[in-house]
Image (cartoon, rainbow, N blue to C red):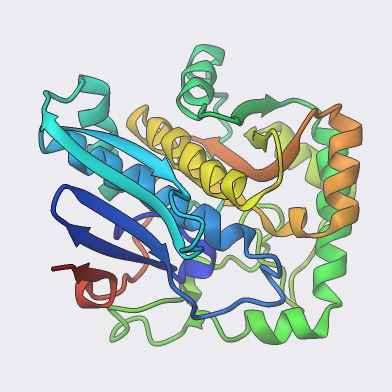
Length: 307
């Protein structure tokens, strides 16, 4: 779970280990009040960590049952993985577990090679979970228009920009543990590729954004409702789709920032005819070279062993 994707690489999870069970909790810090005001991305990040944790248990040859939000009186307890009897993992589980170490956010253009439809279907199938659907998006004109609006909005938002300025890691040589986004990994022209809009970002016009999106494969993670449970499940399903993509030789990156604007979220539902709540956009494609991993918290920051 240490290598799961997370909003701004804050890794907002804690792991409790007790006999027969592993519990994932949401840590209370650091906060992102302007990027993630409702905590959707934090909960989804923890859901992604649960997906990795489940694969680790299965790879060790044990059965397991995942319960999301198992106790109402413990709101920070987002999931519990009950470890069961010995059971051999499926080959797909072993392959996806092996993809965890290779998964990283691809914040650059893809090679422009089309992803075969059969491969897209395998990835979207892997991104299914109770109450969650991962589907391909073909309405790139509508998405481009909304991404352009979101980028302009965030570029002019002073509070958002001040918060964003705190997260790039500039001393990458010595910053080997902890949180943050390596500054070298944020391309200057970041829309829509990096999803991080700064004051100096050159935002392309909508037709150019549409052209870029048309050369990629775009997936949407959609939930039936918009509760905290749905946010955790969305992150779980997103990570399963992402790992399937990596196993199939693809790279990916997730966009959630535009969906925090209510007008963008509602317009996306209307333009795409969605019967649910969009939680994340996942770009997938072929990359010329592997992406380096971001720094991670030290194990002792994440792990807690119970009595």
